[in-house]
Length: 542
Image (cartoon, rainbow, N blue to C red; front, side):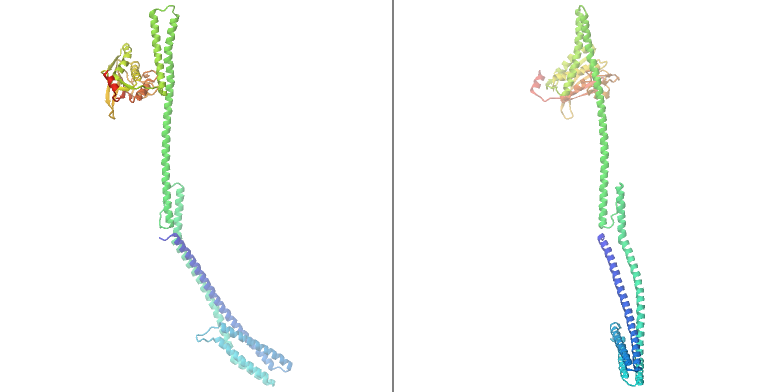
């Protein structure tokens, strides 16, 4: 497929050809018009010369007659001068006519110029006439002189008259023919101009339909496509068509539109992703704000509980002290009872303060755990022994189901014991109608093949609602029993289980709340089995 450059070059060449053709036509027309005009002018000039020759011959004849009829020397000399002047003029006009005929008269195929030949005969007749008149003028007899002059003139008229008439008629016909040729040439030029104009118009229409209109159509399509893309319709595509420069431009236009479409789709996808991310982050922030609000409410409730928990034992202690101070004499039984109450309230107050200190230290990272291989059964037995009297007063059977000495755990003995004691205390104080608390030890194999020792604390109390179990490990959180009644965790401040989870996690284990087999609550502490050490073996043997 030819390129647009070739088409435009062809169009320019055609226009140049038409221009050259028109110029050649104009030049030919001008040349033909010049030749026709020159022929007409030449014929007219020759006719004018012949007319002048006739007039000069007439003047010469009249002058000769006047000389022949003159009587007197002075008058004869004047007539002779006039005749000589007429003779020279006739000779000059004949010479000019001969030269003009030699230059412009047509030449026959035989090489003869008829006009030039007839003018030569006319010139010869005039020379003969001039000699005859000169001889007649020299005659002394006036009558004889006049007859001889008139005879010479009549003879010249008889000999040269037909020639001169033929020349005049020939030149008249030449003038008429030249004029007719000029008119015919003018008609031909008009017809040729119309034909040339029609040819140029037809060629222009053909070139427009073959070259210009397809280019303009394709440019119009490209303009409409560009306008559509400008309005946002990036799916617009152009038909490539011929593989010329405009076809290459069309292909590039389509590639540009495709790239713009892909970019717009990526922008839309990125915008949707951004909006989705903003929505998710907004949801996260909303949830975080809700959690912060819940924490803030828990902390306010915590400070209220702290005030209540600290004020109650202090009030009892202060009241017992006031009663003791007002009594004039204190019986031993009363003093023992008062001191026992004060000690009990003071111990309770001390426990709350110790809980707060443990929480503060765990948050600040000041607690340092001392790990060692600890026999697990003796540790649990100490914890059970510390709550036997309390459990007995509440009618609760506290039982440890594990053969001594049991497995070894790599732990901080005191902290692990406090965690177990907290779970027992939590069951005694918040389990509701508890009749049995059982501590047990089990050895399990984890998912990774490691050996894990589990401590379970199970009661038969009211249990904990399933939706509240995971939340109880959050600091300051309060739970709800399966009967709908709200309660705290093991310490009363919503701190015990959170602290227990922190301690167990530092031991590399985990703690979960679950429902017991016969109702109530089951707390499971899982601790990884330590590597066998000589010290552990000796402790286990002891």
